[in-house]
Length: 454
Image: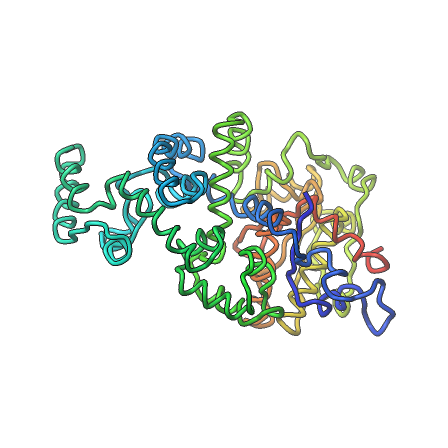
């Protein structure tokens, strides 16, 4: 699926990618039309699907008991979800996904030890419950009962009493409250996707971001992907200032919705995704599963593959090739190459960091390896994985965590986060480097390599 969005200001970054050193551009730079990753009208649904996949790893990795167990817990509340959704005119699948994301289907969980914070199946703040939703919340009684329940966790009477004095712990009331909030939010924001995003971001914060973006009602996909440090920077500043992953809340909610769909219609597919997500700290094995991805066993296999040699031209490409790359071999040049989609992504990231962050070059410390080289590396480097390494596929590279300025570091972080939201990459922070795995879908960037990389 090839739905992609704007990461950079129209024309500016594309000029960087497609031209160099005063030479004639290799392709026209006429705004979004020239950028394979530019936001375009009519692509919002596809973008949302990509973002749901790109941001879903945490749901598989962090959901209590895993995504499948969480889906089973959430499914228990489907009758209450459907009833509340009908009453308030919201999508039952969206409301169910909210239950998944907020509490993993656990009706008595709180975000902290303070019950005035977010609690219950839909994690409603005490102030929101009483001030906006008309729910009963006696905080003094709720705190007292919380202490008693901590001492007697299996006492059903105490839990029943708390559900009466604090309706956030009553599953039906909590679901009803969330549905009512979404109805209220839609009245202010006019779109269901915006109402869902506001559940975490807040109606006022989202309205501020929309005003900063410009007049008119726009889908959240447009607001999010068309707002960058260079394009609609005021809107991007509002979204980025909120922290705690507020800006990507809708994508994780859509990821939860997809998990619930799979749990009902394709449980075997969900089980496979759970397995692949659980293999590593990132979704890299989802992008390139072992068994269906070519792994290079020897240097000859690398030489025989369709890889591109890593260019050493920092003045034009804004990245340097670390001198130690491939140093465990007598022929280090073999280990300075990438598959075309990964090479195109490296060029794209480096150009974007340069355009946003100013001077300085990123230092690439590792690209392709073979199994022979990987075994040598494991013997000398405690950080090297003994498991399936994506470096042995040619789809991964590492960039040193050493930056010329804080501005460059922030620009790099923006690039990583935005491209992960596009499901174009997944990345992990290692002690000395950022490990980036590139999706095969990054082949859309390959035309940018024409006349740039041998």
